[in-house]
Length: 505
Image (tube, rainbow, N blue to C red; front, side, top):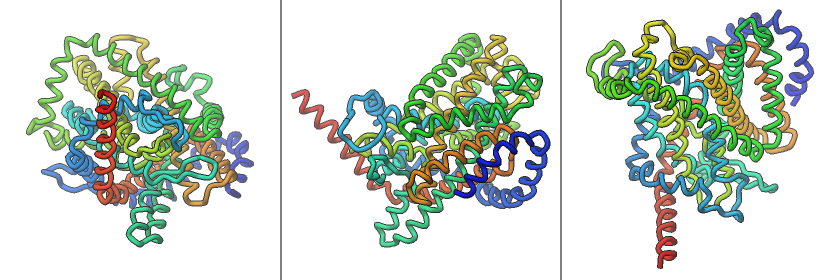
């Protein structure tokens, strides 16, 4: 709490000294953190030779788990999809069950944590590195990741903690602790849960906070006139406004976050999907060729990007970075749902990778391949979100504006979700109290502002590595719990089938 008070008291000084000290802050942090980040990243993102191509072992770890759970659960990502839609629609709502938010609010919050700038710019980078074939493997990895989400979100609800005030605490730290406690290793379980929670807190300040506010600021400046605009040299002011807005939402806890997410997520998703479909309609003559190229390049033996294996690795990597299946963060949001049936929320979580990766990322891929390729934009040296924006602008001069608005909303909603993830990790470590909650939220908002002012690359890379590091114990836990989840899901679906048969009789 002393850190929180010092940070708040010194905040005005940070604002006044921004122009003079931002560079020195960047340099100082880089000097201290970069060596640590380099070592951690080399371990977490260690590459092996995969059929002649370098592949991050962590990506293969996550994709292998997704494939296993899809097969082991009998391709529940297909069997359970229609029921997931009915649950989200409210057909099985139980207002007497424990929990704080509805199924729709839970999935909206979780989607808000995964749908981000990477869905726009990250896909363009993947195609630039892996060729059009990467889009196919990205789609497939999203499909497989649905089953991983089901397992971790079912466990999130099953092992959640209902607090005295009716609030809910849940997530991997709780089911990993339970895994070892049930096997007579409670201390190791608590230690493993604590490690997950600590890594989650670190990750929330980096990729879930500073990176998002930094990208939101860049997008805002870009659509308001660039560096010459009013906000061009006032990152601190944009950061302050964003921090105050974030603070006004997160101060109300998960119920407030879920209410806002349930409004923003449908709007920003529809905005982007409609915009992308309009561009695809205008590029309709190239669409069949684009789809053919994606499939052909996905299985091509040779290409400048490493052929089939190269495209597969890049596509899988973009997918797991986008939907976060296997990291376990989404189960924290799903744990707060109002239900007594853990499997029902596991089925709802199938919708996350579907929307995030199979719909939004695939549309981004098609826009780039059907528009940027024929227009010669790939040869112009554009990459990332600039390439996606140029593809939109190719047909409609003002199209980058709704794209930028979608990007802003993506960043804002991601920050909201990760504030809750980080808070739950923090409370697991220090205990739930009003002071602990308030202190974390104030510091989190301070870092939102800081992210708009300076670019701390080393910190972001460190938090990124920590988030993916926790997928190792999380996936191991999911393997151990897989039989339990399978029974839970099968019993739940049987109960639903039996109730329908009774109703029909």
